[in-house]
Image (cartoon, rainbow, N blue to C red; front, side, top):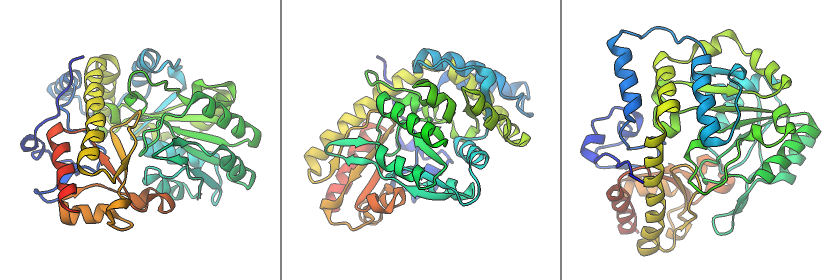
Length: 383
């Protein structure tokens, strides 16, 4: 497998995206979920062609993106998507909020599973919901699993929806199909909705069994709505396009009740780039996955050699590492210490859930091996 090489720091520092503008030039920025790989050639070509023909108007709706995703989902995810059951919007977060607004009333509880992508807390409140935390079971040593009994109890107590992260950010868990099927049965019993954020689905390592939620059972199709995008797998978050996918009449009623403007929020460049990614980006993605596999293993070796007290479990998906830095004695927020003393920026652990994030941090390893090695050495030297 030909690997895609990440770009060197001198090139990366010419970028103007958040990852490269939020920190001083001496900081290695490893918190923001942007990859350091060059854009896939088919995406570059499609965007350049759009500029050459001055094709910068409004996007032409959901169907072109949905049809491109249909082939990608079938080939890479084992998911039979009906493109007429897809409504596009600007990004996954927006899609989650809009779906929650349709399936909950103000003040209703919405389950999330810390440690979890920090914006989930805000997305629930933006949708006028109330956050109900059901932390993941297990941990770095033994692995994680959804707390199905805890989720069941939360629904029994009145929660009306759940935001599922599949694969899970930041721990890189790919939930087993049996767990997802059991979750769907719980949702059916309580008549609630599972909103599945599956944006990291294409970033599952080969050999790992990944199950899109809507494929797992009739109950999942009835009570689930999936939200996904090309943005994380192909590093095009700034281009603004995502897909809201349903697979039942109940789901369709949720999706078709979305405000008219939700679909118009997808950008033209996001549509063009997503179509190119889904149709022609597979070889590039395979090369990126190979590089990420190298780096997730390299990180384990580096930590064992230089920071043996730091606990880390190799993720089965994503390019994110959830690190337990408690042994270093850097306090509840070791990312703050790392930034000040090592000039390494990490994701702030407590923002992923105060109950489980203290002493932890998230590290983005979608970078060159040299940057990863330098980051670990800096952290080791700061002890």
